[in-house]
Image (cartoon, rainbow, N blue to C red; front, side):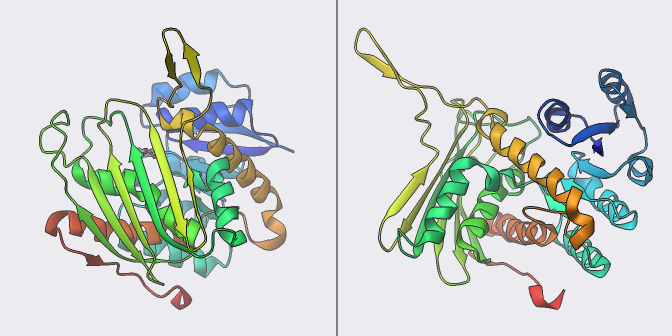
Length: 339
Ligand code: ISE
């Protein structure tokens, strides 16, 4: 019996997930699509057997013929849609961010905790990337000793025109926040955003690049360069330095060509869809598999949950404050045991 999924929001990310579930994911199908551009949802639904477009996202969530929900809607709509998923007991994969601010993220965490079931997974897909998974296994094995320092580079060739300096923190740096928590298994306690001389080719007023400095609970340090208007390609690199050695991923050393006259080179992924395509496939397949057995344990997720979405929101809120002041800002979070 195939899991009947409603995909809410069929813009670039949602449409990519519809194609993924339809063509690659075993045990699930897209039963409902929704978008505020109704025509695009209807057009997409017409191309998928057994799929229908539903104009109201809350109606789609409540639909008894929908077993699970994938939220790829704009961030400001997530809180209401997540609470509706909890109300109707629908497991939900929520594309980042969980919600657009700390208070509403905490409200969602508390609402899920009151239910006593893990229904919410957040789409921090890097945890499912083969290289990040291998790096995590290496750290956990102890073979490079205790990880002390992490260096990250996160470069985009370009971002949408409305992307502002705070979005670089909340929409881009947020991946390094989750990568830090995933690799080091601890919370980030402070953030400082350094503002280097801005890229002259970036839109006026955009503070790009930015260099973020994280300190973690046990005093480990992470530096993350985020540069989203490079004009080059999609480059994401992480190096972990431990007491006994170090490791680096994201070196883009797939096929390396050599040709006359003494020229060599390779390629770099053009966007996150290609660089993390396998990660998204693994993320969604494992989520579908978890949802199908969730009824036995009350745990319908296999990956980052609502707490991880809240923690990311809290770190990004401190990051945005530091972007404004240039100071090191403490991360304000409730104690997880208080939930
Ligand atoms: C986008 O939303 C993503 O999630 C990409 O992974 C990130 O590289 C990009 O900067 C974000 O805008």
